Amino acid sequence: MKSGTTSLHALLAMHPQVFMCEPKEPCYFLDPDQLRRYWPEMWERRYWESEAAYLKLFAAAGDVPVIGESSTDYSKLPRFAGVVERIRAFNPQARFIYIMRDPVERTLSHYWHMVTHRAERRDMLTALREEPHYLEVSHYARQLRPYLDAFTGERILTLTFEALQSDPLTTVQQVFAWLGVDPDFVPPDPAKRENVTAERVQQVSGRGLLHRLRHSRLWDRVGPWVPAGVRRLGVRLSQKEVDRADVDRRAAVDYLRPIQREQTEELRRLLGCDFPEWKTLYG
Picture (cartoon, rainbow, N blue to C red):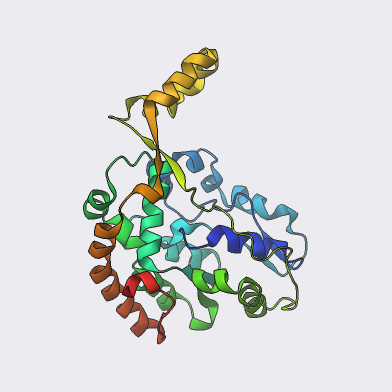
């Protein structure tokens, strides 16, 4: 999550020998109760109900040799447990691409994502201290180890957001080669970035009561009958615009560095490689 998965998904989908499903993150291999709690909008699409419902997402793939999806929740232990076991039972020959980012930058980007999409109202440092999930997702060794234990190493490719950003064509062509499809294919505009966090984001204000109402099933029923002027007023009262550049992140970075350096050392031992491109981590 927040490591270039949307961009990578889009690049893979451009290859004529690869089919990537839409929506990008069907989350089929999550426990449905967990999915309902943390992502009710995806739960309501009900891909989890049956294997047939899931496979229907790939019905248009034809005879391409590679099909895939990009559910980032598959690597969010301990919040979503049992994923590896479900995937292995479904397809023991599955292959995995795990893309990672400077963990400090990823964690901060995760925070802003939650501000925008999940009504995170706490200041940055308080949120990082109080909600362990932010750091858990950046604990890459913890997320990777179950996959390495369940599948052979050659079935797992690791790469970094920074490599995809600095040399997108070379990086994605290396991925193509690993997948066994034409490595010389050149996607249109390989440097295009998807799902980039906006410089100015909307943060829920106050207690968030109006925000919760606006995103409730009750509002789905009554909202269309509310005059447009009242709806616009409700939006203005329920959120405030925040310029990310105006938020001092130094205390958050100082808090994250020692924790995530230790996590990255664990990753280095696990994979046998260093990550000098993670500049914020080492400062």
